[in-house]
Image 1 (cartoon, rainbow, N blue to C red):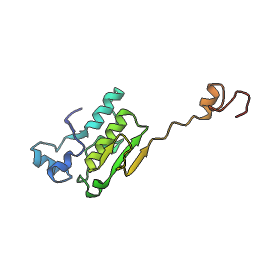
Image 2: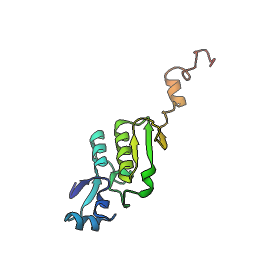
Image 3: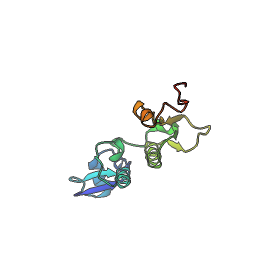
Image 4: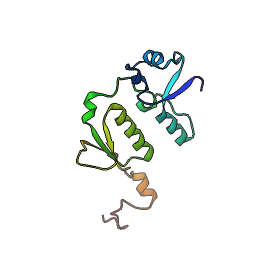
Length: 141
């Protein structure tokens, strides 16, 4: 990919502004024709072994807001059910916004993020020869 720059999520805010021109002046980089992507995008591409659409997730490009947010200082998030990459990205986003991310639920936690378990559809149940886990095989659940 031509003129691609991998930067941290909070890159645009590091110059005290949330725009490409401010970052360009601050870091003395020629970003006018550059495509900026976050390290989260690069890791996702590596994980999948293919280029990922850069517009698919807010995490794939630098945040376009000035961070950290004063309100986020009170945020203490814990997440469960996430993959290692999802957890890492969540931690990076919360940190960039100015909040705190903990792997464990602690007394300071203000928000719990839970990824729902994958529900088994009818096709899955039929293919494995029965109903759900409570199915006794005779139609009595």
